[in-house]
Length: 256
Image (cartoon, rainbow, N blue to C red):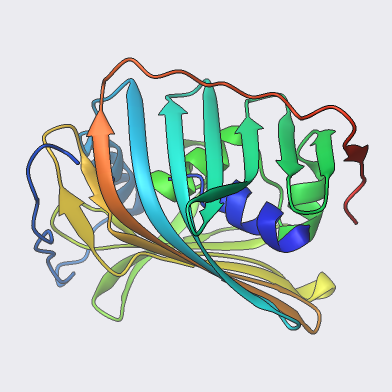
């Protein structure tokens, strides 16, 4: 069940009616303050209320690998519905809101309902609805205006390093054109945990620039989980429904 949970919860996120090309990015050269980098990142246009996405998802951990198709419906800041299909058959569905996570696995006849504690523990960092939404939209996971950061240039990207991390080190990397996120690293050295998110490239749409791929790696001691999400198509600002109901007779489970 955990492999489908990983795919479903993190494959949460492009046909616009026309095909869009890969967005050109710029290398960081001139030094900027942390405040200026943060300001530029949040100036990037993100103009949508709903988003419907089709994606290809790959999942791998120490024991298994899985490939599937995903359909994702987002009502911005309110809810995300994910359907996972293999060979056209729905194998799992999940509904995520700011307060809860619901999920069922048709293959094993099981379902899960709870908050973000389990998902946070599994990925080794505190997560909530808005952080997940940000990750999948290519936005900094945290609200950068609420922290203090050191600004440098590393690998031709602008880097923000959290000052006074208190056990959790956070680094954010941006290209220099629209200040789109390129990498996000969250690490808890004392617990030997790390979450590493990368965005190889973006596509430009009238509503916003979206990642064309998100790569996620979660490390917990000797365990590694890798998820790759390739966005195939996206439709913005259409009326969409969010049907979810766990089938009768399924077994409720706790995920450790």
